[in-house]
Amino acid sequence: MTLSSIAALFGVMVVGALVPGVSVLAVSTRSAAYGFIHGVFTTAGIVVGDIIFILLAIFGLSILAETMGDLFVLVKYLGGVYLIWFGIVLWKSEPKAVETERAAESSLLSSFLTGLIITLGDQKAILFYFGFFPAFLDLSTISCFDTAIVIMLAIVAIVSVKLGYAFMADNASHLFRSSGMIKRINIAAGAIMIGIGVLVVTRA
Image (cartoon, rainbow, N blue to C red; front, side, top):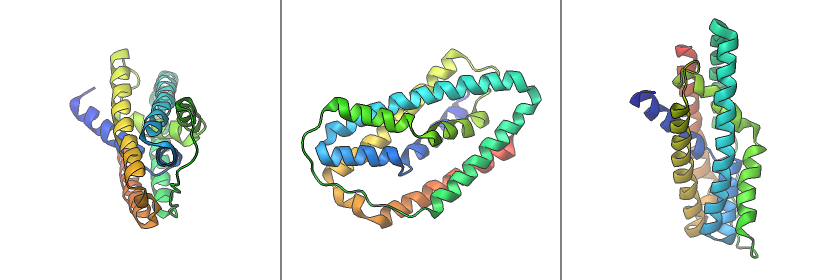
């Protein structure tokens, strides 16, 4: 992997983590309801779930690349089209404000399992990785070291973004009641996703 591909991959992962989906909702609500530390443990669960999906995506795509040969370009096109579609849906989606009322006590294990389960139950997460990996990784020659780099990038991207959401939900919960702010995030993330999808297709 080159420095430019690492930087691009990290940027895409940050954008993916920023998208106000179920994982952001889980981190924000757990942090707002039970405190910042619960947002940390929810984020840890999300990270574990994403690592599982990353490994499945990398090794699954590697097998496809070896099996399909030159026809693997079709997988790249499908991934790019999916990202474009996902960006359009995100752009047009109606924002939903997050409820942030304090609740009764809850265990840290419960917060961790919440993050893990909602990630493993979100099929869009693995489709997200399937979509853009072919544009940044040579899946026919990817090494264990490259895989470790990808996982580290994902950990840094997810943790930094999700903990940012957790901190805001714990300290400035009114921001998450603003549908206008959530709409702006959706539009920005959607536009970036569309751009990434176009890049994947044009590089396929």
